[in-house]
Length: 374
Image (cartoon, rainbow, N blue to C red):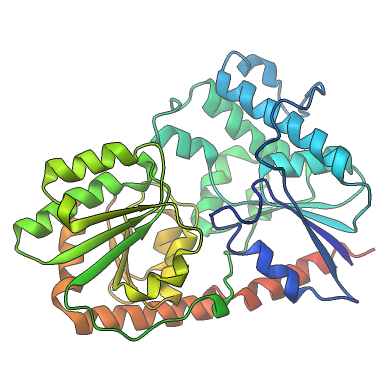
């Protein structure tokens, strides 16, 4: 069976999709399976010029928005690149971004296209202050879900909470399948270590949606309580300078290390003790599974896919988003009690191995793919 995994970003880019899809290839071996990966290079800009029409709504009512114009142009560019680069046919295409799915169905109308929806672009834009809830952009981006449902052959998503999020925007919510992301355990090598001072780490893009401002406020509370720690922030983004200034204002800059972007944080994540990320929204939160497989204790927001990964008090700790006091309380528990921290880390690692292994994802995907075998 000849398969195409259609990504948006190149597979070396950070994120949940890129942490899983490239590792699928070695599990879909010839002669029974052939798998290719496809994505659009970042340098492709304003190449496409096709007229764009959607079948379930008129996008022109939203075209006054620059965000909508950019999205549609990106769709044109993806179409242009697909037609330029793909000259062969496939038995099945699995798309991992809405633009990829719509473009593939446009270019290969007779090929089954399975669409995985990994996150909510509109929710991220709202939380990051880029668009207004219920504004033109929000209406356009949520209309895309029904278009995907109408044009592709099957919808998948990564968590039950995100499936519930999609309910208002599709006609057949009950037909969406949930397959959480999977991870190749060989990439993660826990290392026994004893840190005299608790080492906290977070890995994310530095945008408001990730709640790093709340984390810095919680760390200020920890310092006020006389607790020793170091916070490692791995990632970059548009609010990095703002966060560095906030750390200075809160008096925690000397306890905080800003690393910037790192391609493979899992290579040195095992040397830390606690992974913490107080996101304001998260469809799945792949980095939590990755941190668990590195045997770190988990602390996260009680929202979205994070809540499905963490059983509070057993495989990690959950706190309300935007609550620096409760986040500080949770961090204090794992800082002052190493035995409890190790217990959470061990339970979290076992849970991740049992529920988020790449082998499980491969098994579930093969069952779905074979339903479309000619």
